[in-house]
Length: 138
Length: 138
Length: 138
Image 1 (tube, each protein chain N blue to C red):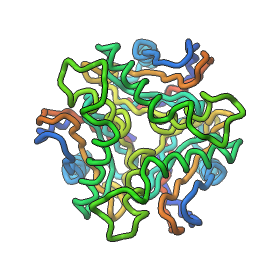
Image 2 (image 1 turned 30 degrees about the vertical axis):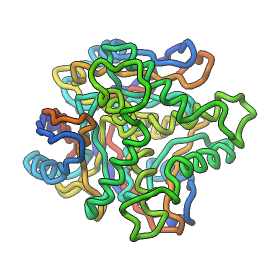
Image 3 (image 1 turned 135 degrees about the vertical axis):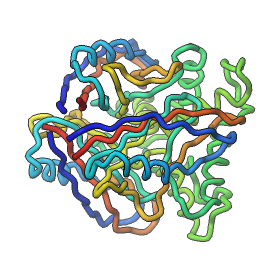
């Protein structure tokens, strides 16, 4: 068994989801590892990672609208000095989580047919985001 | 160190929780691995995995009712062509997550006394669900 | 590659967040592992683990208040025999999760600048909580 590890960087275009599935597949292919687990870790508290449907863009829009209603910018927050989108972003990041673990076999990630891996930008404006990718296996 | 990996299949009976703790324990015992981490990954975006109390069935009912209120079928969703239970199922899957990582030692999973591992079916009707199980360790 | 595993115990002071980042760093340093993934697992269903901002205590207070509103003690729950704070605690633990996976390199955890690792106590009173820590890597 061995470990491959890297930091991947993505420029987000503001609030929304970025499908990073193909970047992960390419990176895993280069690692030459056949069987094990891929761990992704987002190094930010106002962005996150999630697995969602890859077929319907309407599903993605519904997920984002639902999160907006659950943690609205108009809410009352003690922490407001970084703008009205900051505290909702922290809440959404807590809900959807900072890390994902995805199994792989034959050097391919074992997502279901309808699953994609998404970087979720929760701030209004775009940011440069760092994702640590670690593959462990044989 | 080595890796053991498999796909376990479960038939769910419709919306609800299925305790899969004993299936996992049996599978881990067969792997013969003594110490490490077990990763579970649900290959669907309308079902998920979660750890919850195993003693009180009322706790499980309360969790499901609370999720129903948070993501109701009566909500307004752009994506509605697969039925009123589909988009709420995607939201619940996002909230509770697709993956679990559970440590093991002496070939036994290190759950707390009151913890069980549950497959959460979020669609109204039963489905055949695939869980990738991966054990890595010594 | 090898595995290091331990159970860390923390006394919480009641509902709130405890920053356990430095305990994890010290434990990882002792493991002598250089590169891999650290897995944390909370062995309780009314406490959890989360990554959040470490700079502003107001962010932490906002997160906790927001969780209180989402799963209030005044809610109607079937399971109420362990007190009004018990079922909300189970809900919060489901939302924030029982486990975290964090990469490390050069024997240091790769958190972002503003990230800390927190044990979230969701019961009103303090409890003794067990966290299984497992480091796998080279």
